[in-house]
Image (cartoon, rainbow over all chains, first blue to last red; front, side, top):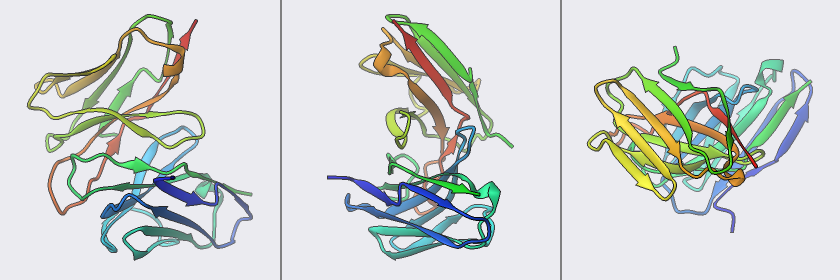
Length: 114
Length: 115
């Protein structure tokens, strides 16, 4: 029983393409997140949704667009991919939006832009 | 602007030794301080967390020490084992409902425990 799952696990694509990463959580959590982990392993939050509503939107290029069809799913679409987008993208979820609750991370999607 | 500074970047400890990782923060609005552990190819997982109303929290071999006046906190791993070899991230966030759980992570410490 995977708590937070992401597809695909690996994504290799050419510059300029558009790609999507899907995330699903079966924990019944209200809040979901997207993080980017760069080649130096630095983790930075990109977006957070609570019950399908966007509540955190960090300074991320407009080419990144999250979509939450329901509170168990949070997808990330990336337009016009650039070399600098190469990273590992993690989806996470937590029970609620307060700061003192555990975030459960998915296994990550390694995106390589050639 | 790095709001949570973590050191060292890498650490090698002998089996049975104590691993110590330090973090410092700047934002006084932070009042929740978790540590996450990440194994290669996996997502980070919560290890232990502390609120600033206590100076120390212990769970098994893992202890967080917290110094509010110095705005510093550290992770101590007692009796370090090879299975503890992983990357450790400190993090911090403010606790307020409705505003999102915006964790700010440190830069990570790669720990290797040698036999």
